Length: 356
Image 1 (cartoon, rainbow, N blue to C red):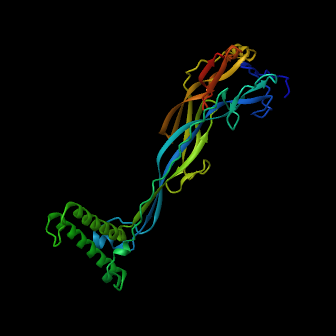
Image 2: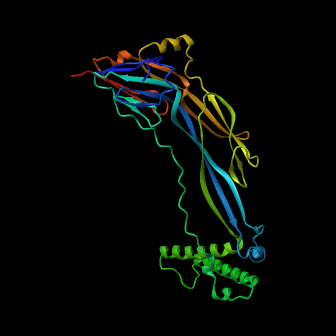
C-alpha cells in the first residue's frame, strides 16, 4: 500500500494508533495481513409504499340486480382501482466513501481484529461486529378460499331456458334463504337445531349461500396489497425531491410519468450536533486515534401533493460530525474492544481490559 498522503492505524500488540486521511479514496475497502481500509457509514432510507389493488368483476346477472333484488348502481363492466393504504420509512447504513480511513498492522505483533461489513463499513475492532437490523418487508395475508356461487344453483335454475329466467329463479332462492334464516332465528323453523353450536352452523351455511348467490347479481371485488419500495440517501437537506407518482387507475408509476400525482420527500437537519470549525477538523486529521461518527438527527417527510403522508425522525450520520477516539485508549496496557452502530457509525460500546 502506498504510504504517501496516508496516516495509518498501527496495531502493536493491543496498541493502536490512528488518524484520518483524505487520500485513500482510491483504495478498495478490505482487510489483509498488512492492514485494512474501511468506511464510516451514512444513513439511508427505505421508503415502503403499500398499495391496495381492487379488481371488480360483474356478476352473471348484474343487469337484473335492480329488477329482482332492488340493488341499484350495480356496475355492468369490470374495473380496477388502486389506493395507497400506508407509507412508512426505515433507516439503514450504507458506506460513505467520503469518510475513508486506513489501518496498518505491525507485522511483528498480533494484528488487530477489524470487523467490516460487506460494503466496507467499520463495525468493530477486536470484537465481532454487530449486524445491521433486517429491514422489515411486507407480507400479504393469505387469501381466503374463493367460493364458486354456481355450486349453489338448483337443478331448476340450471335448466332455465334464458339468463333472465335464471336470474329470476336465483332471486327467489335468495329470498327463500333469507326467510328460512328469519324463521330459524325466531324459533319457528320446521327443523330447529338441538343446541347453540348447531344453530350457529346452520346460520353460517344459510349466510354463505345467500352471499354467494347475491354475488351473481352484485359482482365480486378482489383486493390485493403489494409493497413498492424506494431507497433514498440524502447528502444534506432536501426540499420536495420527487420520489414517485401515483395513479388511482394504474397504481405507482415512474417519477416521470405524468399520469400520476407526485409524491415528494423533504429532509430537514434538526441541528442537534454543533458544526465543527475548519481549524478543528484540520487539527483532528493530524492526531492519532480512531474516528467515529457523532450522528445528528434528520426529519423525513413524505408528501402526497400538499398532504403529509408520513413524518419520521432518525439519527443520521451525514448531519453530524466525525470525532476522534484518542490512541491512548489503545495503549499496550489494555486490550481494547469497540463496537460501532452499523446504521450511524456512532460508538455504541467501548471496553478496555487490563491484561492478566
